[in-house]
Length: 216
Image (cartoon, rainbow, N blue to C red; front, side, top):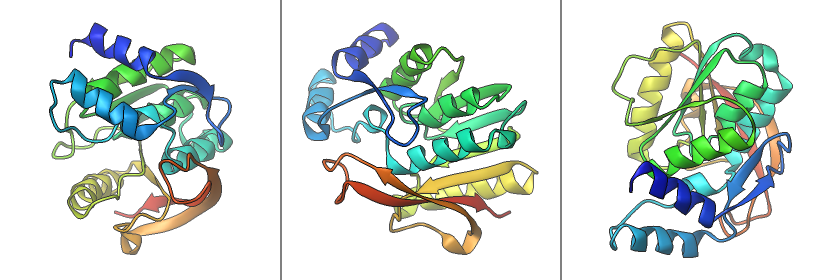
């Protein structure tokens, strides 16, 4: 999809609504995951695609956004990187909390479009970047990652990047709703939240979700 087509697709398949745990932020969100997933694949000529992570406020991102909004000193005046940014929720929260600059990275062009339209809806500037940066050198004072430990392969790559960032002096925080591959042995618990989530995505309407500091 071209950028304009991606933006049009995001706007046509979502509605603007406040995030339950962080109502200061509004996102273009979908009502139903499976139908949107099917429409996304049809738009790409029937290609097999990952779920539309960009269209929902996932529990890990909500908890991390709430934590940043409640503790603006974590990001105020600093350069922030939001990894696997999805809708851009965490990136937008960081800007609302006073970050000097936020880069939101995604591998899905539709997510990049969603980040841009959501940043515009919240009247903040976020630099949305399309690409995989996990093998690169971390370059930010704060690194944030919501709901990224959902597979063994992703956890291994993500943890390597996050620990390198922490070893370089960055503040590194991850939000997680109890995914199977959460690497607790490399993390320190910071906060716990009960997050309202769509039951079409999770097995319960409230998901106990934790925020962790990543150790070098």
